Amino acid sequence: MTAIDLFCGGGGSALGAAKAGFDNILAVDVDPYKIRLLKKNQKLFEKFGCNLVTREANLLKIEPSELGSEADLIIGGVPCQPFSHSGKRKGFGDPRNGLTKFFSYIEYFAPNAFLLENVPGLLHGKFTVELASCIGDAFSACRADVIEWLEAVGKGPQTLNVDGYSLNASVVNSANHGLAQNRKRLFIFGLSKAERCDWSWPVHTHSLERLLFSMFRTEEYLQLHDLRSVFIPKRFTSGKYLNGSFTDVPAQRRWKTVRDVCQKLGTPRDCAEGDDYGHNIREGARSYAGHIGSYPDMPAKTIKAGVNGVLGGENMIRWKNGRLRYFTLRECASLQGFPTGYRFTGNFQQVLNAIGNAVPPIVVERIVSSFVAEKCSKKFRRK
Image 1 (cartoon, rainbow, N blue to C red):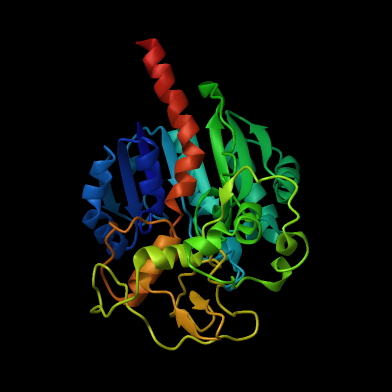
Image 2 (cartoon, one colour):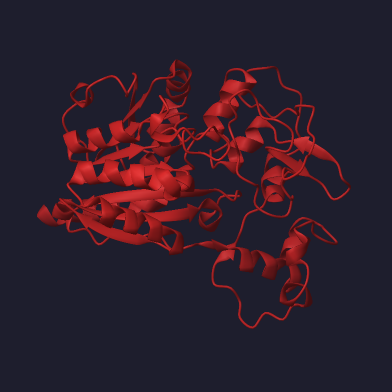
């Protein structure tokens, strides 16, 4: 099965697709550093039986036909800066906006499925109207219907049937799928009606309730990390969670935490700039209003890339004794779901940009896995 990863960045989406079963992936990005990074990790893709091909190209300027003629899946981790609350929010008027162009690739390739990822900010205000116009034009859909569909996504997953496709939208928190990071992103999974595929959003495998249950009822979490107490937000240290009055054992596994990741990677060590491992401490961490860092016994706050470097309060851990420190680059990579064997080289900002802008591999893998299984099953039945 073939996939094209547009705006591939550091390779999170491509890695997730490879793990889901895609054996041929074309990864395209305008940044030569990101392309070099993917090439350094080609052997890792080969371990999953995937032939990874990379191409450096400006997707906003080339024609879709320059990338081939067919694909089973198209993925788009379209740049989120135009729509992010941490940016200038110029939206569709930002020269980095790739949403309009992304849907032109969908129109040209008419893939069996496509997956779009971006910030939930697209579901609010003028961005919703602009996105609805973009989708309406691509699929000959009524803009009012698309707006209504997008505005309802905040209440839960929604489906909209348009010309040729079933569009499925949901805001997904990666922590619910095994990532040690609270990262909420909008995903739109388009499935060709010709596929007749029995697809649905993956169920949550991890939960906050189970984490708190393991802390205050069974104390398994404390025993695992040899703790007498945990350091978490105060709202979780009172009421039923503290006195152990759970009525049922939560079905899911517990959320993974910052401490889980730190313990697995071990104590940070001195590394030269550009070292493959990048597990060295960067000085200067500080907190300020609204940016106090991540609690060690909860999933990390959203890992961010930054444009001119990451300021105090971002990508850092705060310990109970008040001590603060930045996450190492390797910790950031692990919190984003990259395996420890994934190689990152380059200067600090290059690596952090590649990590922070990546789509977590586990989320892509889980979303497209049922589609892959259905496709493979059909091929087997035809044989």
